[in-house]
Amino acid sequence: MINSRKSHIQNFSIAARPQTLRHPSFAGCQWHPTRFIRLAAALFVCTLCLVSPTSVTFAQKQPVDKVVLQRKGSSSRITRSGIVVDFTGTKLTIRNRENTSVNTYDADEVVEVRTPQTEQHKKGLLSFARGDMERAAASFELAMIEETRDWVRRDILAMLVRCALRRGDLIAAGSKFLALWQSDPTTRQFKLAPLTWGTHNITAALRNESLGWISRNTDASRLLGASHLLTDERHTARAKNEMNELASSLDLRIRLLARAQLWRLRIREGNLTPSEMKRWQSKIEEMPEDIRGGPFYVLGRGHLVRKEYDRAAAALLWVPLVYDDDTHLAARACLEAADALREVGQSDQSRSLYREVTTRFVGTPFADEAASLLKSEETPPAKTSRAE
Image (cartoon, rainbow, N blue to C red):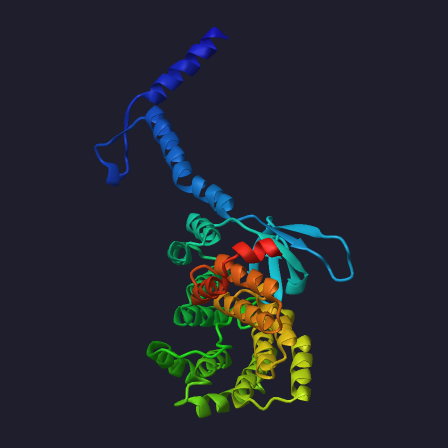
């Protein structure tokens, strides 16, 4: 037994001795089994370092999303976990984490989507919540570079539109909105379309940009361009023709918004009838919920033209109370609702709305106007207040 072991050890020792490799390519080289084993082990470790972590981190880097759903006909909510492949205005597609199945749900059934965000995306949301639109926009622009998922990039684009609307920058808002629409024509964020609903003196820069938009071959860009040019004397006729064509668009939202935009010309003419106002009200109530803000503003303006101040205030207040995505439009509607209430002697409610404009819509020209109106209405309260 001992001799057998010695023989084995001797055989190993012989095998362990350096030997000259016989292959011509390795002439003069010596081969050592133990060194070969060590080298092979080292190469194996290096392979693990180079390959294995990549496959592991690839799995780890896949964002795990949670989708909260409320299925049609059900009163309860369910949560699905996995990887959201896409989320458009019509459907959400999610793949399970094992990559064995893909499910699609109607967008209307989606209550919430929770997904990992880049650091710049998070910073942008934080700055937006704080009201710092410049910093928020800068962070969102960086997030657009970092983010690779198309459906998340669309959410970032929507936030860039919001930032531009807060700043009153209709050119930037229009550019980002059209990029969003190009990525998903069924976008859930059509309510952010930066249209003109009131009257304003169009700037040369916005006019030039709008002329470019109206000349494109997409309904969304034509809607934006025509909206800004509709009350610009030099381009009213062309913009009106565009709106009349868009009133037959295959996109329901564009079709209804184009028709509501044409109401602005009727307000400028001034000869509105009671039946016309009722018809507008009915049309608004038939519209998709998220695009009613601008049309409600025009309805309110129509009642103001007819000096129906109570009805004007009721219509205008829909904008700041419910459809406030366009901050400047919401501020203007709130201010004009206050003006309407003042006309019918509701001074307390009027002042309350003026104060709302000054605090909630800081940074808009309407906040400054409301502050001036409040100051002008101040009366020396000493004797009056005591008598009361």
